[in-house]
Length: 298
Image (cartoon, rainbow, N blue to C red):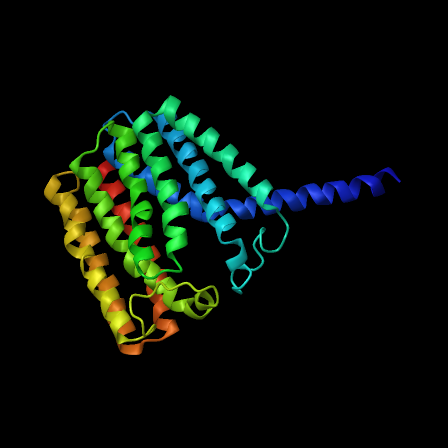
């Protein structure tokens, strides 16, 4: 009888915990925090300061998670319209708006306190600014037009810059070089996703592809143009002197291979080609970050 009364309570607790975990978008939050950690390690001198590094990563992860929650709160009714998102905690009713906002407030409070007290006020301010831009500017703009991608690329590219500032205490040329590279990367990356999910996005009124015609040659060409910028931007860190020739060669080769995938998209103009480009964008960024870090260690 005791087991029978405890089992439902345990089940409810676990279900709630699972819903909160889903709301956090752990994988996405982790990847953003990793980008910040990448910038930190590149900017750091010989003594990294591992305790500070860990606290910076935790604080960034918490505030990123809060940004994802606010995005879902704002889009809860739109998420009900899309197959990809209708089972999320809010549209499915597993969590309420109040529960979600309280969770986001706790994450913001703890994350800001960690960054402010253990890293710097500048890093805390930049991280909160990124959250505000993502949740309150980019999110509503998704129903306005492709300008949303331009705006969203800014908070998407800020983590390595913030990481560099966390390590050095200053906004320097190296920080802006990392920002520029990840900013340009956002366009082919996100437009590849928008191509694959275009039909679902249209159900919610999202207008994210750069061409009014949608999945056509004009859109594919614009993706190619933005990808082309990755090649000179990948060389810029070497010009600034914080990356060597080996890493520059790897990054340039990755940029060329990434660009070739956009040619395939122009030729095929299919979801399959866009999906390949989407996965290619993830691989590009991972290899670039590893190459930069290996060069730093070497």
